[in-house]
Image (cartoon, rainbow, N blue to C red):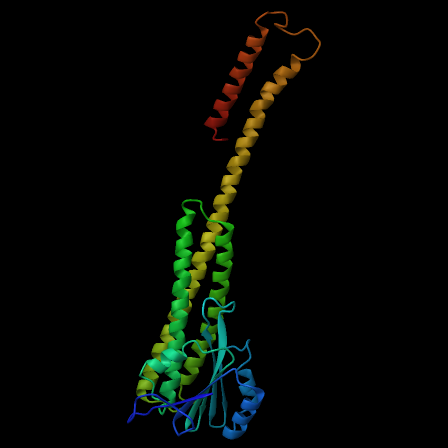
Length: 306
């Protein structure tokens, strides 16, 4: 557990040993005992606190008396197998509490920003949401660069199975991000109506900017997904077309060789055949066969059969 405090009179963020009015308390991977003590000490709903560390929890907002529970999710490092992790923000009397099961990847960035005023609880919550959005933007941009890099291989027919496995990973990441961004917009709209916490005009402006930014990120993620699917469909079409060309070529070769097989098959039978006694029969048959194959090949080529 870490406790931070800053105010308009003392804007420098300091870490405290004890709780003070206007503090920000941050807990990572809390134990059952810590959650129970937190619930009793601040009269918080124990079930909602448990929901805050549920790995499958979706963004939403709940109110219990004068306490507001904002459930959101933040981006994990790219090396992690999962894309996002849950974060619970509790707006309580005189204190803001954040709880997460996984390490909050943006914590140090918030601490070093020198703009966090913990005594302004609504502003602190919005800054946390803002920095989480920044993480999603970077993740989406990274996915976009990977997609465009693979797209450049499409023209050279250099896309490999490894690229397609990468596509699956990117698609899962983008889908996970969309599952967070879409309900987050609803959470922000709920906050904007002022029923959950007291907001100043600057807070409302920040929420509107956040909502607009979240909608833009949603559109950006959807666009990246569409690009990804278009590349996959285009490559499938190109592969199918190339395979059809190969089949047409092999079929044409089989037909052309069939002419040779047919003629030589006749002259291998023990019956009287034209030019069978001619000393130049071999060359006559070979020339006739070559002529027929050439005519057939010209016909195939003219009709673009190979």
